[in-house]
Image (tube, rainbow, N blue to C red; front, side, top):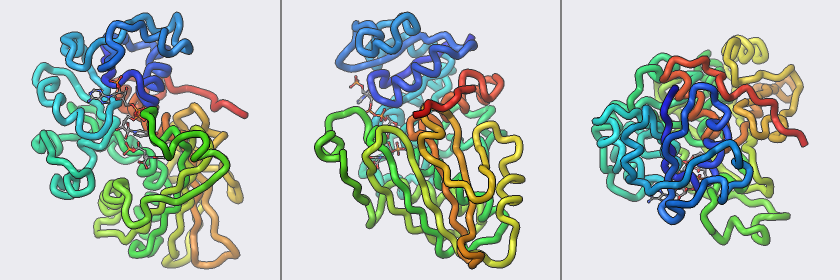
Length: 342
Ligand SMILES: NC(=O)C1=CN([C@@H]2O[C@H](COP(=O)(O)OP(=O)(O)OC[C@H]3O[C@@H](n4cnc5c(N)ncnc54)[C@H](OP(=O)(O)O)[C@@H]3O)[C@@H](O)[C@H]2O)C=CC1
Ligand SMILES: CC(=O)N[C@@H](CCC(=O)OP(=O)(O)O)C(=O)O
């Protein structure tokens, strides 16, 4: 059994991790932390976990974390980088759902995240956990940087085009919409029902912190820097990301065959039949990314539609997928979920 700790068990990605891990046949949940709720039974805060999770919250520095095989950090940016080195030194593997280890250029990370990095030496060894790209490196990772939610949807949509060299990489456009749970469980005015419901808005147009992460992944695939415009939007749904991606084609190519071939054998990427329009509800609560590719009017613009559940393939599900790879489990273990609909 894999002994698992979760730092940040009271947040949205934390409780999503618990939902998935509670039924994972190879996992023994060992420590779940909260700063304010230490001592409280987890199921008292989340009745959905009654009779599934039989632990009480402990403090984030509790010694029980040292006894784990792997610790997930479902915490705000800047927390895992302070605790990871100590855990890794005692043989505990770390999976960070935040962004502390995602950007290889530490100066670039510090610019976007507005803080000094506490463990630059771990950034150098950390593995970026997008299994569809990095599966082999993930197996032996001691520090795993779980990708961001928008970066997951956008990279999976663009990668087949970039890897095949069929798109103009200097003018890529990613127009992405997220549900409100993307902002986390902490109280914030813009996420209040009366602010976010029955309304729709873009944000972060001059520059969102996921831009350097997406650019890093696409540049690696292209082998040369890409030009990307990324515009996130907040949409009044709870879960889900819908990314609409645009690029100019270099020549004639069978786009449907290209995408089907790239993701053949990938358990969590579903390339839909030609002409499809995926809905976020078709992946709700599952670890799937569903993709459709279009070439409107037979012109030279390709439009890719990519949908995920931000809390699952965009966070906790991908983190469990990475844990499965790191510990030699079947990659789909605990993640074989039929999406909830409606
Ligand atoms: N929501 C989403 O869709 C996605 C989120 N992420 C990333 O995952 C991380 C968690 O996000 P999310 O679950 O939404 O956030 P929440 O705000 O919902 O939860 C944050 C959690 O972190 C804990 N926490 C806060 N500060 C500290 C601290 N100083 N030390 C230890 N624990 C702390 C809180 O617990 P307590 O206060 O009880 O200690 C809480 O459990 C973030 O980095 C986020 O950017 C990544 C992809 C998608
Ligand atoms: C809707 C919303 O607010 N989304 C968040 C992004 C989601 C997230 O948590 O960011 P990471 O994946 O980097 O951790 C935002 O734009 O800040």
